[in-house]
Length: 495
Image (tube, rainbow, N blue to C red; front, side, top):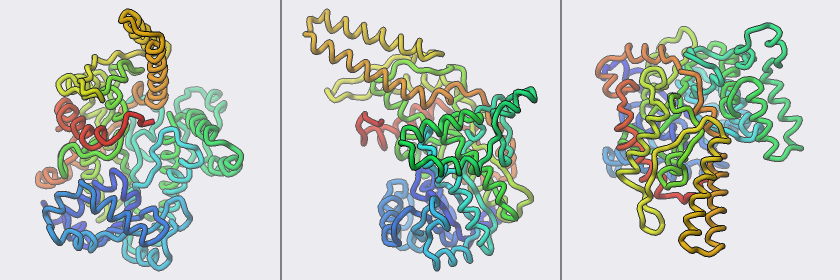
């Protein structure tokens, strides 16, 4: 590894929010394994006290299976090494001043060189007030704290490529300005544009303050989806993340800012070992239902690329951007860490790899029998999809009658298919916008970032999505990792 690249991290102190999350853990592991002479890493952990934050550090990071390579490297000194680098900070991006103890906040403000903002609420249809507080207000609170930091060299804000909402075609790596509305930019005539309301981020936050006391949780969820779609976003998550970007960009002042926009982040392809994943990511509930025989048809365009990126590649891109821009920074940089332009995987191919895996390695049901899956059937409308589900239900009920079963078992079959129809409808409500998505994320800046790295740096911190063999990754790395780390640990009732 080139000394100049590594030297950019030597002795540098980092502050990371969302440190106990999926992406945060992989970032921490990579830094400590490959850049051990980094300075302190302050981890903002949601906790009531310093003691509670230390407990979460021990339970969720130090004891996590992800860190087994570091345990092998350091042996008996593993704990002491980790605690010499990691500083748990009881705090919360949902609170003013991040709710960090005053003396510790002053220490961080004096010492931190790089801030990495990962904390987010990633539920697509979250309550509007909850999503706004974390995804929109949260970044603004952190950038306000960053303005107090005396030697800050970089603020890295991790967002999502889907802040681009319902944009179509090749979507460029450019920042959001306050009040941008995707719905308005898609209209071609002035009269049509004027018919839509302007997006006022401050007004959106005030709107929640006026209503949240009187609205039930369901209504708050409906409000989030309604506001998102009014302004051209597909769901509450992408909308509130976009408004968070607007605030950070508007409030940055002289702070060097990099925005990282990954797409659908899935399991590791290589580091620290292939297939590590924690919890269900975006496509994983679909894999789980399909592998267990509960999903045979889906609402999707089979020709649409499903933009997947691998978590260790995202982390490597984040580190490359830190190394490049913490030393010098002319203007805000946006990086799409995505695959839909450089190495797209089509929806039909993705499901084909699911089928090949489960046909070769079927899931074993509670009765010890293999679950036989069929190739996925795709539909363009919910009516067609539900018709197919009920056709299968009628066929199953007929088989039960021909077998001479009593009425009650036949009724159980009907109830099972009704439940399955509801599950499929819920999946479609969540995923429809992504499986018919018409945008492709341009990654010109990201490709240039790779070009600026030495061959040695690319080997150690590689994130070239063009190198991914999707068939091998999905069938031999991701699904086995999902089965090992998630499916075998959870019941089928994931909703």
